[in-house]
Image (cartoon, rainbow, N blue to C red; front, side, top):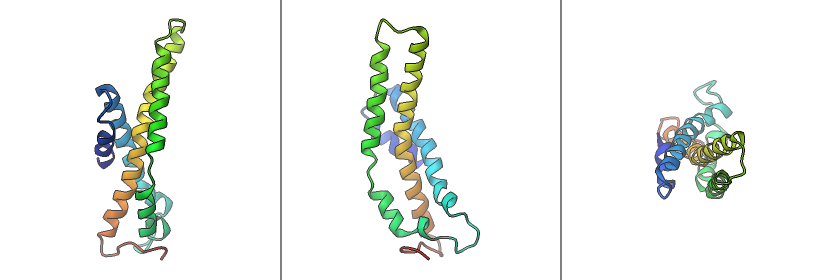
Length: 137
């Protein structure tokens, strides 16, 4: 949910169909990012939190800007959309460029979602009695 909301915020200047695709990517990225700390460090015991569940990683993930990746995904989508206007494309090429455009738009939102999902997982874990270690436990 948080990934979708942040993706909506980042895509507010996009036209509605593209905004919807980016929000969809944000929701999917949020799901992946929210599970990622427990994929990296499975909950094998109540004290399983170490490097991937640390305050250090929280600050690094929160501070790293994925704006360049989002911008690159949008540029790739626009490039595909521009190629669709060519009169010389076969029907198969039109379908290919349309699909690539959709995938690049979804990828743009996915970048935001993964980051927000990871951060929200760590923030919520930090609010539990076990908390988060500063570096490594």
